[in-house]
Image 1 (spheres, rainbow, N blue to C red):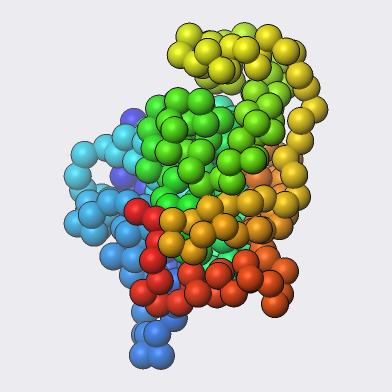
Image 2: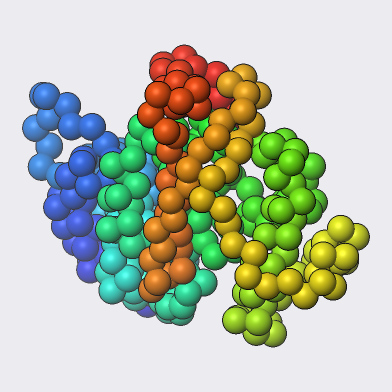
Length: 279
């Protein structure tokens, strides 16, 4: 059963203890609120202010597991706090595993410090969980996909527009890389895993994937240098640094350009207000 009082008190305490800087918001000079405002938390959790306010007032319907997960992520809860929140709402906490999409608060804080740099947090299957504003400007919003299409490797073989973001001469290597990465995960996670499900879907849908899969290639690692193509800025030669969180198998990708290079100048132009960006 839902513990409405416990849930309300926990949410209020967490909201009041969070500061704008903790969640990537800018603190205004005239700010008087202790902690975050309800409307700010609601926005972070992708829900209406009225819905969130009712939770703090011990009213409204019991929130779904999906809603609780959204609150846990929006409020930067740790895994223990997330599990506690699930129990207060009357739900069984989701199983902790490397497949979890919950982003640790520390990793989120690192991403929040990279607002002026293309950066994103992805799962081991290449599903984008969070992007910096510059990442959206560079590659478009890749968090809106649903189902198998959330995986970049899946889109590589099923959505031709995915390849337009990469220089044509890189396509053959990326085809090998995505296939080898998925084969590694299928072996690592085993039958019944999401990786195996994606591989089965691609084997049924893509002749190109089937040919590459039958090569049984392993160990084709991402390159440090990537050549991305923006529709307005053109070719950008970027260095990609990868920071892995071993407890979740999430990866923080950070893209930079050599100072003084043409690509560096393009990134600066892309970060300017009103600069063209992908939808």
